[in-house]
Image (cartoon, rainbow, N blue to C red; front, side, top):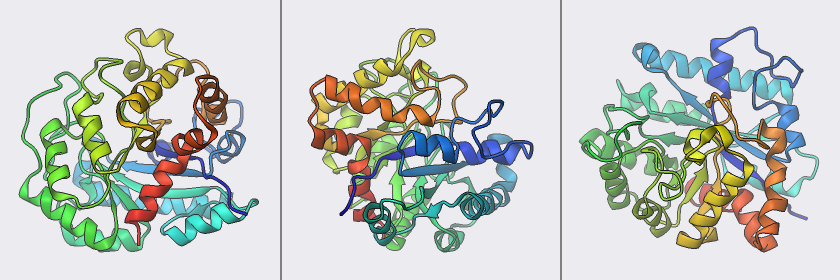
Length: 321
């Protein structure tokens, strides 16, 4: 009997671990991590996407940093009993085995690791990377990230960015447009044949910060049969971030599903990449609390399953080879 997978499409835990050898991947009282194996199990999260972000100050050694984070992920998989997910077959194993371990998906955030040599992409694929965020919130070789201060402006994808899309499609890697600017969104729609995702962004109409998505951007994702993951960062959730709570996550879900349908909304916590968390979602152990709130709002069991992970699973299966 198969089970419906719960999937969180974005967390920055590997970067935190990279920066601090003192941290341990366990949910001890003094542990500052939002995501641990214990927290994921308690929160009933079956698959966690671990982003590998290279901060601006380390971009010159971006590939080295990324390779170190991949090594960290492999060590965690061995020590903590994760399954690194790279194919639909791996998803089958998770869904068909009730006692299977938590799944780990590796993703690049910002594509800095391949900026100096696109030929490194097949190697990263062989090492398990399956999703790539084209930009962070700044310019890189491939395109323009959305500014944290200005919603509009900037070019779209460069020729190198379009070439990257082509190489990713050949390999079977999923395009993530989180942090990409508006013009870049339009270019992705034009050049990507299958679905793409925005792993951790919210609705601009609900909270008007530049990183959140306009209705038009949300409709672009839906038109490609893709998925957008709700970000838990209080500043992106509410106009008064100090009062943000799990209820604000539900507000963004409701808004998006009413606009683009329940097939195109998921979760992208941004845990361990955000300085503060909303009340009721302090770490991954609280993820299960989203389910009863969605049911209270009238979402059917089927639609709740889609939002909690089914939509991402559909896209992963479509793109990965």
